[in-house]
Image (cartoon, rainbow, N blue to C red; front, side, top):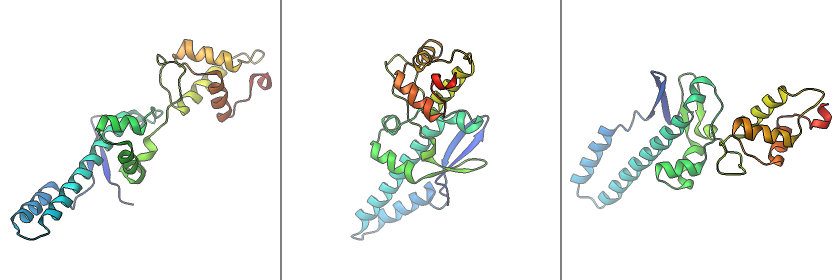
Length: 196
C-alpha cells in the first residue's frame, strides 16, 4: 500500500505533502503547455483531465492538512482523538461531505513511524444536551466516566445521574443520563447497584 499523503515532523508540528513524485507540478505544467500547442481534437478533453486531476490532488492535500492539523496532538503524543466529522471537514475545505467521504475512505497517510488510513483520524462526537457543553468523543467520555468512578467510595457508588452531574459540573460536559449509561456499559463498567 502506497500512502497518498506524507506527514513530516518539523519543530513539533506536522507538515503534510502529497506523496506523488511522478506527477510533480512542473511536469503537469509541461504537459499542459504541450497540449495547448497541439491542434488535436482531444485537446479540450486532455486539458479537462489535467485540470480535474490537479483539482483532486489539491482537494486531497487540503483535506489531509485539515485532518492532521486537528488531530496533531493525537499523532505526536498519543492523546485521544478530538471529535472530527465529515461535515466539519467539508465546511472548512469548501467541498461536499460526499467528496470528503470518498477521500478519507480510500486514502492513506504516511507518518514517521507508520502508515494509517485517513478515516482512522475521524472521531464522532457525543450528542450534548445543550450547546454550551464541551464537545467530547466517545473514547474521551468513557475515559472521563472511568476517572469519576475511580474516585467514588466503594460503599457509595455513583449512579448514572450522579456521574452525569459530575460530568457537567467538573468537566463542562452536558450529556443525558442515558448517554452516561450507554458509554458506561461500553466501557464495561457495571451499574452502581452491582458495583456496591
